[in-house]
Amino acid sequence: MYKSLPEFKYMTFDVVGTLIDFEGGLKDCLAGIAAEAGVTIDGEEALSLYRTARYSKDADLFPDDLVRVYLEIAPKLGLPTERKYGERLRDSAGNWRAFGDSAEALARLAKDYRLVAMTNARRWAFDFFAKELGDPFYAAFTADDTGTEKPDPAFFQKVFDFIGSEGNSKDDVLHVAQSQYHDIGISRKLGLTNCWIERRHAQEGYGGTIEPAEFTEPDYHFTSMAGLADAVAVARS
Image 1 (cartoon, one colour):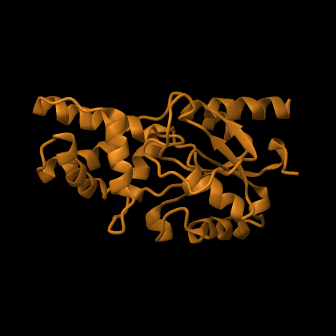
Image 2: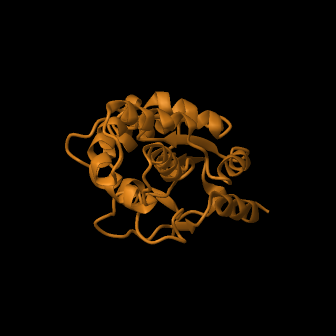
């Protein structure tokens, strides 16, 4: 039996896609480029092309890799192929917005838990994301800090080592994420209790996130961060 919500000391969070609306950010930037070029693009098609291009063997760290990704998908979307537009897509990460419930939910959760960010983004981008979220994190681990990306178990081990240095263990952690591929499946294999935030619950498919080989039934399941924060409040009342 997994732990009840009040029993955890830490909550670890995927950031991009769980707390930050990266799909909306990508689509907005691409739509802006398209409008300037006098063309119209389908946002879901763009996400599908992005997903295929992003998860290639020659991928760079995120979001720097968006320059390469843009140059790969632009011809398929009828967009201009100059590098400056790829750099514009990369730099747009600094303006991506949080989901409407993210900052408030994190502020509520921070009263009872140590919040730890675990993001495949580079530190420069995470600094923007953290500010957008109200700087709620007790600690943060980025691709620059770990030298790898989730779902690599080595990423999680860095966090386990940190928590261990504070005299605690992964049993004290609830891992919160929207990506079945990057987070939910591997967290289960590593023995973490997990919480799936199903951001695309009203949409079909996996959007900009790679589809997992198999679906992992989460320990906790909400369609928003507000749902998690509300459940914590009820459990602690």
